[in-house]
Image (cartoon, rainbow, N blue to C red; front, side, top):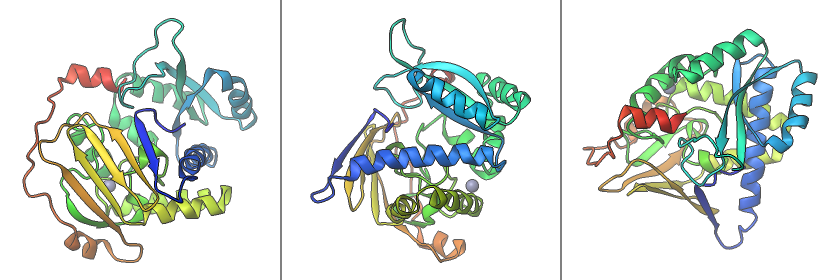
Length: 285
Ligand SMILES: [Zn+2]
């Protein structure tokens, strides 16, 4: 499911893209499942429609995996981090994790309930540099896309998380920088698996992440223009002045050259909607 705090407007002649994006969400979820099954990482977070629970659990059993329920989350129009418990009779999803052992499932649950992003990140196979980045920036900006960059930004398609709420992404985590080598490496493994599942769709996804994209965050709205569609998503981070990333992906350049070619953000002129830590905890639960 594409997140419901997003809007997608396809450009003329690209009307099939909203449907394609839904398939890309599915492809990513299938890849993440396989990553755990193939012992590449310890755990994966899943969100399940209660109506699909039976099919999913039968598949999990067959694959000798463990599903550990974490909590029920209301289906609402809020931001993704704003995961609130459902009222009685309100539609909800089951948020849980899959692991290969019961012990890992319990360990993940404990870390999740404590909001221990370090342990969660490690169990999800995220690089340490990206976990540090997330812990530092998430309390300020719940969609922290390379907070110190604006203007011309060059990097690896694998690291491009700008379209994550619309489906297309190669890695599950937010990369600490467009040139994070650890992310690129993880991305290579994930992309190979994606190609095994659906070669054509995986290639289209890669092509999209490698295409010129303009990402513009302003007043709590993020507008992203791609060659095929314009996407909107809400953000909790309120900027007084727009922060615009002009994405120019590079596949075969080394990280050092790319860093020099990217523009550093000069001065952070923001009115961070100062969230108390209590509110943040509430939002990410
Ligand atoms: Zn990193």
